[in-house]
Image (tube, rainbow, N blue to C red; front, side, top):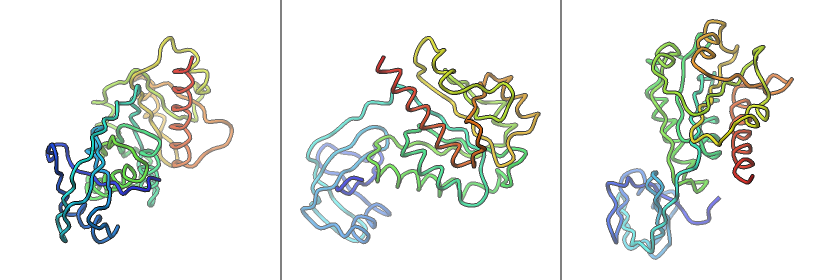
Length: 249
């Protein structure tokens, strides 16, 4: 975790010398973090840009920061797009938080046949998940803010999904292969990866048929049946490991 407090400001609100935090970010700075004039903070825009700055003025709903120098983070060589069936309870919050820490580029929540939630009831939760993603970026030093997309039904998603260079589904399926076998067979490193994770109870036979028909390769997670949130974080970690190993060859 960074020792310097981090705050988010949309790129449209940046200026050359002074940045102004208002609303929730100002409240967090002044009331939660108890920042004082002269303190050093870091501001990031969620699109790869960040800057250290000195707090020059403090008010309840307004904080002015004088910039010290700008840092630009290059986009990741491979973008990981998580397609996540919404699990029961609050496990989606954990998935969002940890997936952001592990470097995903976007999260598409899905309502499948075995999902308890309904897509039309999800907008308030989506907004909460986006806030969780933002807080995760602040804490882990991530300057790229992943977008939490509006939840879709499986049918709507599968009919409009744009394929990535590599499309993977974690699957209890006869055609599943180990992840290292899949990555070992690639002729070049993918620039985009879609990772599809099912709900408790897995995808239905009909959904699997559509998933595989759309070009998703089933991968095995081993002999132990994992909980949804465990499977998601395990898969992202495997992908990042394989991409890192491939880059070093």
